[in-house]
Length: 451
Image 1 (cartoon, rainbow, N blue to C red):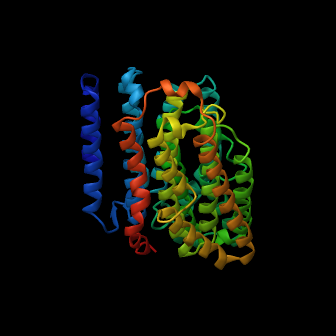
Image 2 (tube, one colour; image 1 turned 90 degrees about the horizontal axis):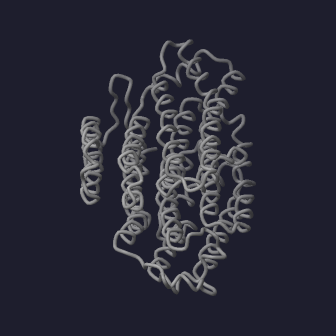
Image 3 (spheres, one colour; image 1 turned 120 degrees about the vertical axis):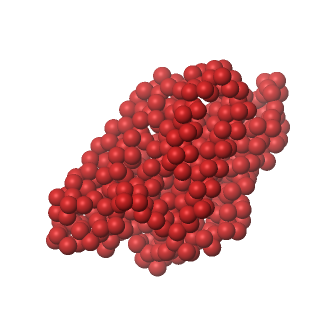
């Protein structure tokens, strides 16, 4: 697979001469090669303690490849107006390559390196193709929040190397418990977890997320919501597998904060009038469910968190893509301008309804399955936590229905009738978000084989 991606990067130098259709073909080929290689190796394998692959890696790599191809479909405007097209597609493929190496890393130092390097192409996409001058500030928020929170993780990795001479993912748990006192490895577990809790992000460390989403181009928002937030969840899964029961010392506090933040975020979203900011804050609420499920350390919590990451990665990416389609036509993200859209873009309204249905975990979407797993895990952990989860989920449905009804119904903005209606490429892009969310539930038995 790495050889396949190397040849793809080799051909990137010729993209300036190609038309958009050939770029699509090349993208499809790259995704096909990745998925074909993965399907051909379904079992866990190790490669010289540097690379590691299991079912979780398979799912998240497939998600990365899927979101990357949809990023290119949704970024037609960049190609049309020739806004440094070559560099944009180079950064997209570079980011995909780095994400694959991150998910395949069996060495903690390698994982940390690629985890941090993924910031570079993401930051370049935000600052190079963002909409407003404030994108520089958003990029700095994104950079310093992530780098600052990641330093304790580096200290943890260095500590494991000093006491055991290895940073392999397979021996780290043994090293962690063999050479530490309980109070000390509670502190180190906290330090290692914070890097990924900021990346998810957890409430109070989430301020970089709305800024980055609002100022990023559609491709930047899609990759942030679809994959990079899940990188934090993946890292938290690996750290929790190493630190184990030591996390139980502080997990109730993180769980309570996360579930309470679902309510805080839901109330905040009901007051927003910006399309993109509302979708960005909804990511904070959904990732709070992931944190709550992981902190239980139950297998149902891990399964629910993994399914939620996949479901949210696809549905949230689709919502950002849909918001961008409206923005390209109206020139605004405000609900006061984007009103009565069902009269002007009826097909978009239907697609928007399906995306909103997935965002509120309506059946038969895979989002519903994830919330059932998470609720069962949290209820088994502590019945008091169950007071927060249904209310937070209810508020999520409230602001999602508010977003749909306020934008699609009501008096229409008169000048909308002069805009171009939907085309096949746009409908195809949104449909590729909707289909997986509604049909992946048929293959959900694969999740039960992971734990």
